[in-house]
Length: 421
Ligand code: EPU
Image 1 (cartoon, helix red, strand yellow):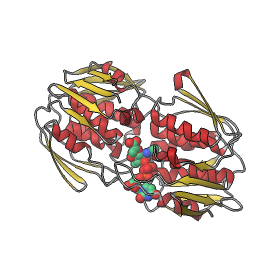
Image 2 (image 1 turned 30 degrees about the vertical axis):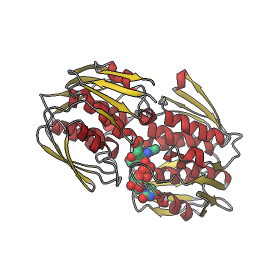
Image 3 (image 1 turned 135 degrees about the vertical axis):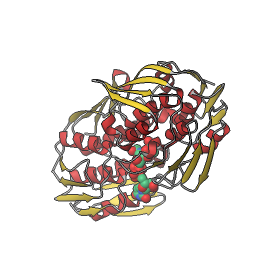
Image 4 (image 1 turned 60 degrees about the horizontal axis):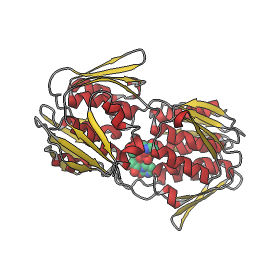
């Protein structure tokens, strides 16, 4: 298994190109199942999670070819007739559950393995299930699989989500595009990935209004057609690299990065001493003074501070001036990076969903490992400014969501390399 070795160093300078968003692409790909005509995605990120979704869709009968070194995904589901999403694929990646809505809408039935828990929390699917049931589906759990059936097809419904779940919103919106009648989804997630999905579905002929607000209205149509759609920029990758100069100093230009996708995150960066400016093609993040100032963070649904940037922000707070309090409200177990950061000399006290970080002047390099994607990259950020060498193990987590991290950070002066075993 590969490892990433980082030697802490001086300030960063240069440009990083931002890739298409993993989480947008993972929702856009299953949309191919909704139509017999081809769906082509451009600006797709080259990540192992995207390959896992391709394997899943191919197992369902979709044909997928890649072009431009993987940046273009040409998908066709004209012959897709399998409706069983197998445990062996689903267990690798929770986003596999996003085939449930499209399969049910297209075939009237679907058998999808329940993903199971993951390192950051239990992550049940009750919201997806109750929304689809409200649209007339019958869903039973047997042998670890959700068996879903909509005799006579799905019907539009007035649905209120108990929590604004990203995945439940995506599954429900996709299912509703082909349902009979109107679906009103209330307390819908407002994340930019939802907006991107709806823009693509609209190009495919879907009738949808209200994306980016808490109420999405979908008028079912008989069929969807083909389309070509560019995947939106990855806001989490952007935010991660905005935090690199925050901890290591210097300034980086993020080509393709969009501040408007980052909500409250940009305000927090400004408050802790990071200067942000928009360029015609992206943005520049620059550390104003020496160490950043401590700020408090509460993770929330969009446009609040994203949970997917909490680990990276904690790494930055480890060397901030003062004490910061980070509260994780989206996932119940998303502080697995804290014990690893403590091994690097950080002062962190975790009590339930609240972490109190007392900034220290310097972190020290150490061998570390992480149990999830964002935790792994937080350790790389910490390593950029640590004294000595840090070895980040279990790099496969990183490869799920960060495209060529060592090349991108290397290009702005970080001393980082991948070591294959
Ligand atoms: N939840 C339920 N029941 C449900 C669905 C969700 O209780 O039926 C709970 C979850 O357990 C969690 C909370 O609601 O505590 C939020 O879950 P949500 O459904 O919004 O998240 P998701 O769709 O499973 C996506 C991203 C995550 C990101 C979250 C929150 C994808 C593929 N994944 O997950 O990304 O953290 O939204 O923004 O879009 C990552 O990229 O590292 C990552 C974990």
